[in-house]
Length: 463
Image (cartoon, rainbow, N blue to C red; front, side, top):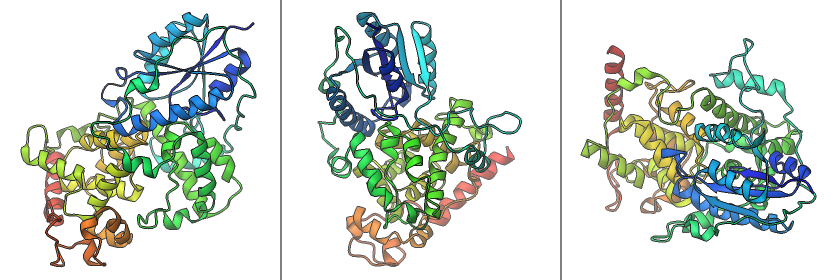
């Protein structure tokens, strides 16, 4: 009988198109292991919303494995130590894993390779970081030429089928009980809105893709309209690896619509974010443009007014209805419409002049799709500090954005204090002299926030 094969699972919680699982199944009995390692990521250990999703995704995967007479082994602690212990317990010499590019996982992959035979595969992106390079062989730092280069390389790899059979080891190693990890909130249980909004797991990802097929052609027309919500809502399924971008690409590759072309570019953006964090591992906590280290942010850790402003932003009590609707959607659903993500991020950074890292951490804790690469790249794009970013001096006007993208119905859904308001008053009730008693005035006027941000920017530039 062949030696048992360890499959190290992280953000690849699926049976289909899973290279690590597929190749392990061909080599011998499969022992699938998920290790909850809260120490290696440091400040980027899984946030609360992601932990909620993880619980249900692991439940789903465990059922799928059980239908094939296999088990999901759960361990908590240092990933390298736990995987080595499992391998020793079952007599395995080889670990199969899909590559992950977060800096803590790259370190762990290196350390594990010193202990066991580690077989790494490319499984979670269209192309692995470093595959698509400039003419000189350098990695891309700008998205638009990266997008063109990726499209010139299509198609991506073929999909892999689910393993037809999984053989079992002579004896299963010890496993934690999922309930003992306390991934679900209890005191209080704030997950009701998230649970109502999402179905979790590989089957749910496939069902959502089936639904999305009817709408993908309209993506370009609808993606910026929060009241319509033309989003795919595939991002948490992609993040947790319940489905792959390769599966989505092959599903829609024969489409020629502008909507599919636009959505395809969003899948490529995920690849781009991984390329960025491979070049700059500290991107989630360090400005790429180090001159911004000298920008005089208002610091919530030392400035009580800034701390109160940050709290109002987090709670959706800024007096800007589009911002407040987005922040309340984030808390209630664990997700936010992409256009509104840009508006709320810009507001924190520029109107409130609070360092992007405070926003990145709040999103990290609240998003079910919180991804180190995408989250940090998006925040540094908004702040002007990134490799390919919006200029800091370009300050998004939330009130204008709200009207331009017809956010009235969206605001009514998430800001019930304004549910009876019509446009244009719903976008700015204070300006229209109809501010209700239970809704706050603006935390800062748009013009005042804009001028304060520009003054700080000029001071940084003038040194």
